[in-house]
Image (cartoon, rainbow, N blue to C red; front, side, top):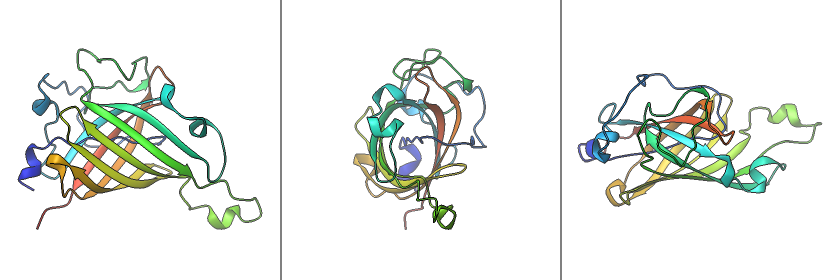
Length: 195
């Protein structure tokens, strides 16, 4: 995990209900990339993501079981994005801090079920998705997961460049909305120690 200690990891989540603990409010990172992505610990990284509703395909807004969608957003250092109902444009700097990468989410809706069997499948995640976290320096992470009543849970399925061989999981939770009506959310990456 020593190698991962200096590696920048990003994430984001989409359509989630509860913010994550452990991120200091008001954190204002320095403008250099390596400083912007300081680690919470050797195995944990935290980032803010601004989901951009302007990029959502029709299935993101409407549709039913089996419908597919894609939506994009921007990755920021943890503590950069405002909470509550905010006016930040996902593509623009916030308080002088520019985005440090791109987030993409493609998925498929797994509900609703027919009313006669809906209660039997009440615990099935509403959305299944794949998320991509692509840093501006070319490194990237991929993840696969699903929505829960409290946010998103995703497995880190791999990485590109300096993230090659990455594994672990991601928890995502919203803490507000941006000017596009989509969530600002926090993504907490927990990396598995390398053997």
